[in-house]
Length: 267
Image 1: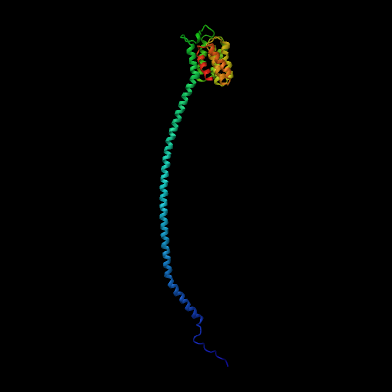
Image 2: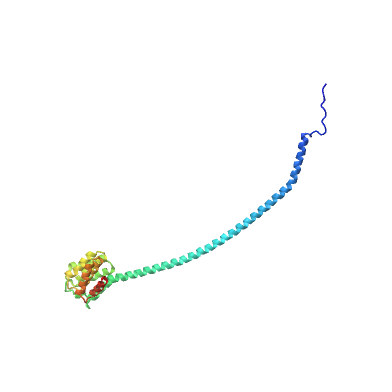
């Protein structure tokens, strides 16, 4: 005979469905209670974050304005400096032009003192009222032809056309060795060599003046130039010898006066 199990007691444990059903209800109730709190916390955080963003935006705007202001000040400074630089550059350009003009004038005066004044002095010293150099006349050696050649050569000399000047002066020396203008032709041939920086050859050419024309008026001038060239070459002994010779032999000449001053400078 099959035995029937005894009935369960009243204080026995509830079934699983009852246990789990009751727990779910409790969790649901707890979630419903916490939801408003979570919502409140989220809204507060959002407002706080929004406030911080607004503060950062205001700070950024202030910084941008400050940077723009500083940029404007720098732009004004750059503009002012550019204006000043432009003024200075204009002044510098004007000063440079003025100095260049002065330099050109000085060069012209220096060139005149070395060439034109020498030629003009030669013409004034040697051209008599009749209009010919050294009393040269057409019935003497070369006559007016020598005068024309000499005048043309000296014109080229004063212009700085040394090659053309040399050709005319050499023609006088070769064709008319005894003419009164020949000592001056040799003198200026030597001067051309000086300008070409051929100092030793210039000394030889200057010395041809007293060698071939011992009584010519150009002799003391040529000897004085020889003394200066030896001084420039660093030979003080030879320089002093020629300068003293000029002073002692032609004491009343212009060359002697210049030689005395040079000797004083060398003392």
